[in-house]
Image 1 (tube, rainbow, N blue to C red):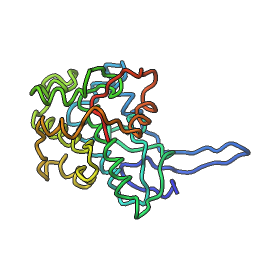
Image 2: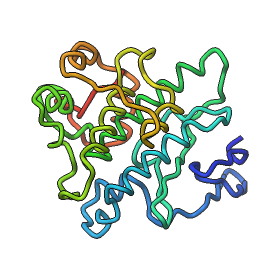
Image 3: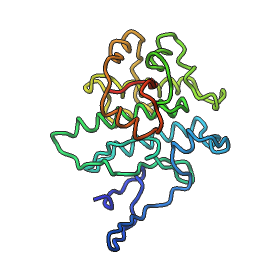
Length: 243
């Protein structure tokens, strides 16, 4: 099944080898390691590879991989499963939690994938691990309500970014993490929004507060967060909670 996946934004499986009880999978080589390695690592030289244009492209790459019409749904999207080639193009890897599409469940699973993409997109903008940031409430919503959303931008970018593009990406990410699955955009719409072809609904603080209450925590996101980042405490508050 995995070897049949052919898409520019999915890591390609070239073959496998079974010898005794050992199973070896041979994937294409991705020169720049994972998104998590470059984005959250301590190597400043590595971090310089992630200018704003590159971050934008990576987000679009991820969504196109999720949006592909292949009959499979990846349910474990996180920085360590997003690999970068020599040109810093992103490809999704590790289909250990993937499942074949089912017509009755497609809309549910794609909304879940979209939700986790929203979390990853916020990490790409901020340069921060979602689960490692501490605050009494969701950080993004806190900044949004106080009119300080630009404080979320990764300081390593300096002033080398387009403010309108940043706001667009944040709004798209927040749409993807909406409490109501029916209000989360389809991946095809997300691609169009990120590329500036479709207008993005402007999110106002009052509406954000109503739709992203702190009393609701998605068990799937908790599982994603624990799998993504080791050593996090139960008191840790994420950048934004998904539903």
